[in-house]
Structures are given as structure tokens and as C-alpha cells.
Image 1 (cartoon, one colour):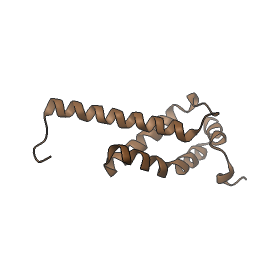
Image 2 (cartoon, one colour):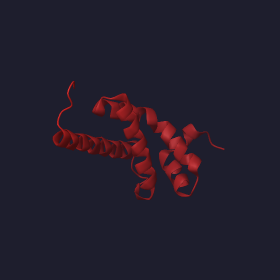
Image 3 (tube, one colour):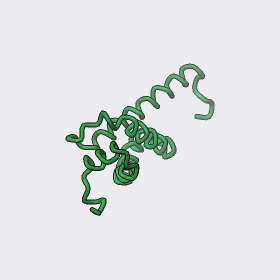
Image 4 (cartoon, helix red, strand yellow):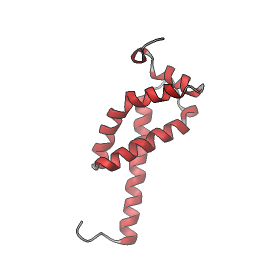
Length: 105
């Protein structure tokens, strides 16, 4: 067996597409810390960042068949995460518009 550090992201995606759940777990482990730091800079809040990272990996799993293995996985997952952050910001803007600013904020 090849050590997980030596397996490319593209190969892990191929394995995940073939039904090897552990391959996607390895991708998540490989990219979660950097993705969290990326998202945290965008949203600011630690809990919101953690949730956005989770949502991003769920979306990546669901859209894995659409991923182009010739492109960097890190860039793809960051794009998904950025879209999740933007979605969250839009939802919060609508809530503020509808419910007004909370007192004490």
C-alpha cells in the first residue's frame, strides 16, 4: 500500500468516485486545515467557519463526479467554500433586512 502522502489528490478523487470512502476522508484530512484558515479569514467567526468547511466538503462529495482531476483539488474546494461563505453572507443580509439589527450588536 502506498502511503497517503504520496497519493495525489486526483488519484484520491478517482478512488472516491469508485466507492472508496476512505479516499475522500484522506482528501478532507489533507485539505481541512488550510480550508478552515481560508474560510475563517472570510467569515471571521470560528463556529461559522467550521460550519462552512463542513458544508463545503459535503458539497464537494456530492459534486465529485463533476470535478476535473487535471485541476488542483485545493483550488476547487476553496471555490466551493468561498461560494458557501457568500451564501451565508447573503442569508445574514436578508435576515438583517427583514428582522432589523439586533439590539446590543
